[in-house]
Length: 95
Image (cartoon, rainbow, N blue to C red; front, side):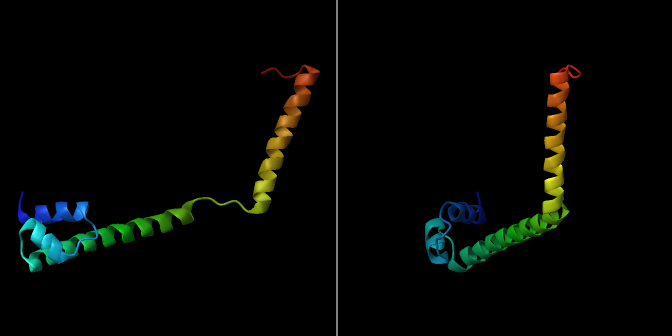
């Protein structure tokens, strides 16, 4: 395990650690610890930006029903159940 991996492991366990603490715990220089920590922060920021962008794009692709469409859909479902009930009572429909 090289120093960069040690720094990444320490930062993943202690996300609020300061570069000085990380450098001391991993026995590396302050500048190197700071550099690796910034790289990790940039990766996380990029992942979050991509996730948010994908979520925004896919949310617009989902079909959304207007209140009228939802009402019509509910009415159709209600009507189908009612017709089946009457057909069962009349003996014309079996499940």
